[in-house]
Image (cartoon, rainbow, N blue to C red; front, side, top):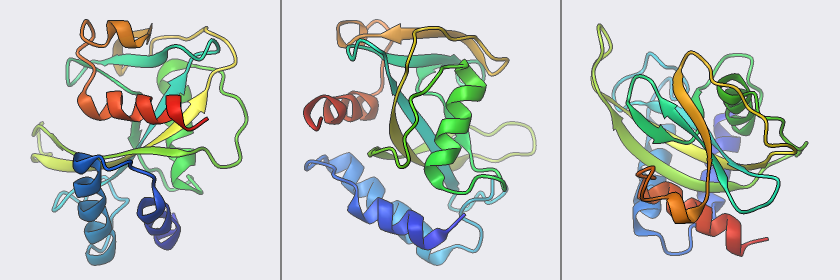
Length: 182
């Protein structure tokens, strides 16, 4: 993974005055500049980079959510960087496909639509740590999906259902960025 390319993408992300995302940008850039293994899932202080996919339905009116088995919450599909991932957005694409089976439109460089630093609870030998998450916009070419072992369920969700699914505020703001920057 090219640290400089990730730094450049984070620095250039259009965050529309979103204070939480701007604070996350500062934290992500500091972590990238000052830590030895920012892409390693074994770096717990101050955490590590993860990547997420905000998948827009073919009708353009809904996004794809997974009910995360471990965290017991509805979230965007995403996860850890793997050594074979060439670019950070490739991590997001791989995770979306692994977790949902969604068929995504080809995109040479999907748009970065959200930055969010959030805590992950301790589990076994893994201590509490932070995920420095970058979310990229993808578009599904069909509505079909499957449920992976990491999830309890997968669903298409429109803005009118955000409260029902308890969609986090950072995801709602990212959704707004996809709606207004077409």
